[in-house]
Length: 301
Length: 304
Image (cartoon, rainbow over all chains, first blue to last red; front, side, top):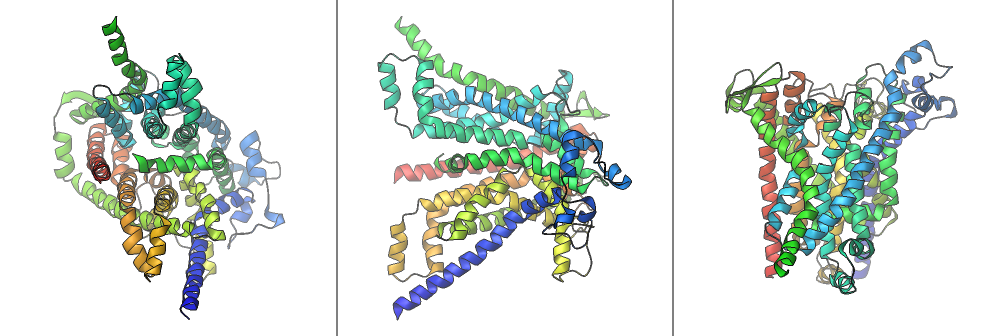
């Protein structure tokens, strides 16, 4: 009797959990589904009421992607549609490349500088070590909108406005504190014995870092670097204020400008958005375990 | 020889962190100090004149008839948004974390699905939501119309009563995953034996939740609360930029957007920077709470 109430309760609980999960899944997945599907629909189909939630064969097209990658207006488009393929659509692909290049350099500098710095903060005691660490960490939490104006004035004066170098430096400064933080927490959980053994065997600092410490800390390093990559890839405030031409414009700046256009092809915007989120999504899926580990490092401050 | 060795050992940590520190100093700390200096200067045609006016820009923001009402209005919008966003994100992400803990097919699906909003850059998601909310051809209008909830297509983000909530809905979508991951990691640290004991004692789902889950999750909950508050104060910028540009009227003009408008639309750099500093100060209060809370937790842990 009691047992049957408990199992019945469990069944009801499970049903509620499944029902709520389905609602949550719809909320999470539907925007992504819709933007991908929109990118493959003809402009005319996108202007249908109601929208084609499940596109049929007659409304599917790859024209939007064709235009983004080649800059050629698809030959079968109407005059109206031709005007909707605005030139800025052709900037999407180079802007994504810009974003990847910038994010790659930021990630690389994070590895070269943040990895040893995180190690030092975890292993050495020195004057004001904690104060320096907290100062670095505190800068991470400053709103970027607070320093974008002086940044603009400074960069304008040293003629670094509209360059990738400027963005790389800013993003490096923005991501380093977090990288150092994650790695410091990570190193604290690795026994120091391995490093001591390496030192006794006559290992120099560099060799020890590369041959002993790096392999031990690899999961933490990957987590930190992915975070640095995704942060710099998706940054918007600096990217939109400090860039002017495609020499440095990132995908966030181009996409935001594209979406402002009143009569821009909506299918093209959807295709551009899809292309823009593919690189970080790919990365997050491949390194899913590391991403999750990186997020929960917050717990072991 | 010995002293030289000791000295070398003493400088060594500094040489390792110096390059990182230079990056942070050059690109975060110096601009921050410079912004202080700009906020104390008069400006003409957007350029600081170099004439020191001390706190005039700040006083203007709080008292000048043409500035202050807009500023207070934006504080109100910021407050409304921040409180709703934090509550919504914490409740939904905790709910999702609890669902992921149950062992059924949907829970593992959720784990993968959450990666999408997490990985998609904020501005890209803003562009996606802009298309979803579209007044003429948006899919949200289409679905609501089909379901009979609305009788004709409506302007969602051009409606002053709806715009902020539309931004909130998109914001929550993007920021739930990070908290859900943290809650999930926190839930995993609660031993199963406690739940088993509670079940034997006949505690129901709700009692278990409020007397075991919540108290055990307190440190994590505090961390998420403060982090989310900091995010909510500024991270909505991309959404406001793409979706509403602060409008309609002043319904989505948050403090972060006001800073941008003052500086880059009206090129009043001095006043804009002063507002940015006020925003940063609001933020620093939270950073302070953040550090105090964490230190407190750690002391409690090492004490016990």
